[in-house]
Image (tube, rainbow, N blue to C red; front, side, top):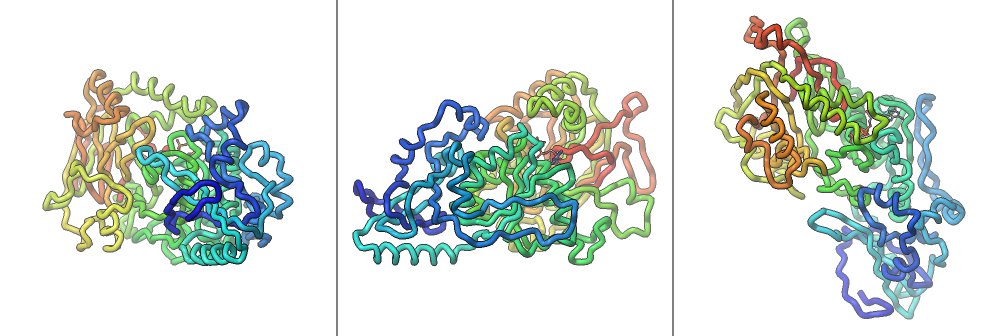
Amino acid sequence: MSHPTHKAKTTVPITDVLSVVLSKLPHASGKQWMKRNKPQASSAKTKREAHGSLDSDRIPVLSSSVSSTTTNTLATNNSSIPPSHSNRGSSNDLSNSSSDRRDGDFYDGIPSGSGNYLIVHYAAIVCPKANRWRVRSVVLYNSEQRIVELWCNRLTSDLRDQTRPKNLLLFLNPYGGKKNALSLYERFAKPLFRLAEIDVNLIITQRAQQIYDIVTSKSIVLENYDGLVCCGGDGTFAELFNGLVTRTMMDLGIDIKHPPYLPKPNIPIGVIPAGSTDTVAYCLNGTTDIKTSIIHIILGQHSGLDIAAVYDAAVVKTIETQPRPQLLKLYASVLSYGYLGDIAYDSEKYRWMGPKRYDYSGFKKFIGNRGYGGEIVVQLDRHGKQDPNDGVRCVDKCQRCQRAAWSGGNGSGSGMAEPPTESHVVRGKFLMVNGANISCACLRSPQGFSPYCHLGDGLLDLVIVRHTSLFNNLRLLLTMTSKTKKISDLPFVEIYRTREFRFTTQGITGAETTPVINASNNQHSKWNCDGEVLLETNIIVE
Ligand SMILES: Nc1ncnc2c1ncn2[C@@H]1O[C@H](COP(=O)(O)OP(=O)(O)OP(=O)(O)O)[C@@H](O)[C@H]1O
């Protein structure tokens, strides 16, 4: 590729190209653009809010990149569904949008549609250590307009061959995190979706559980979309996949209360982080950087993600006619009893504090924790092949997860049939019990609960922290926030890799019920399920 002003060689794989635009002027070159849009002091706050991503690479969106296609509308007559907004519109919408101009994300002064310049917008990893991606531009020039048009047609056709979303249904939670999801969306997601010519139907939620209700409403035609995306935190993402898996069960005629198995949805889902912790986004992308997530979504990059199912263990003993226990909830990151359950329950009262509520409740519950008794029955590989401390991290194109996906996600990670298991019983008093479906790394805890836990191998890591002394609890907290130390190194922490475990506050051995805690200790905690409180205590997780 040759540059009009200085000679440079840039190699861009077509898989990383976001859009190509013909132009009469070479204005999309990164440096010129940076000069044009020097960060304003007034916008510094918004930038900090955007997960620390500086905006030196603002994307100019040329008016030609806004096509005149009509927007998809929700095929629904459900009055509970709020009005959707579209990111598309006429070029007038674009040039007249004062807020867009104020943010500096659009530049509408470039004549385009023809010309001697071809502007190629592409995604590039700018900080491999932090896994941060940005949009860059390169400008190609030829004195013959016909040649430039040929380039444009060729690249446009190659882009069409890429498997990328064209229509997205996007749910935005304005309530989670710092309550700034809408401004983050307007500032970062909308211009990028426009640039990539993706139609977005945006639904801003008005209440909790609304995403679940919309997605499970038969009147919405999910086939109209290439993907479902949410802009929010882990709770918002949980609503989305709980709704989608339930909807898939409904479409297949599966009993959603007692499903014999969990079907895999056909439509991919994505998350744009705008919550308080954003663990799922961090584990998927290695960062909570909002632009990186949007770029991955635009480029149609996929990875498998295990979903764990929580069943009511109390019902299984009483209803013998039921083939399966009752399904309570699905989760993607962690189910946690004890300390983190207490925090989830307590911190809801202080949501007005924003993410700081976790520090406040965390301190209160740390001081007050007396441990919780219980019995855990965990199913382990009979041959002891699943080692949660094997040192194998889940990276991009992880082989372990890919093998599990090819073998139908049987969890063995080997493409073989499900290995035989045996029950292992753990009893005692615990500071917390965690079923980690992913490493649960986040900005606060760079190693997470279990750094070698995989996103899509069909297994979860059961992390058990025994109740010991206040000093040991402090050691745990320090280790959790360390960049290098793992909590599995602590002597009062046990980790088991499994497909299934059962937790009861009272041990169940066959038909007998054996109390494992004495009367003075019989207080219960709550389960924290992807950040939301689950009221049932005795559960089975698969
Ligand atoms: N409009 C709304 N009003 C009130 N609650 C809402 C609304 N939309 C969604 N919710 C609920 O808000 C809850 C919290 O949202 P979310 O999990 O995204 O943010 P968070 O808890 O701040 O972030 P994280 O889970 O990453 O820590 C979710 O359980 C969701 O059901």
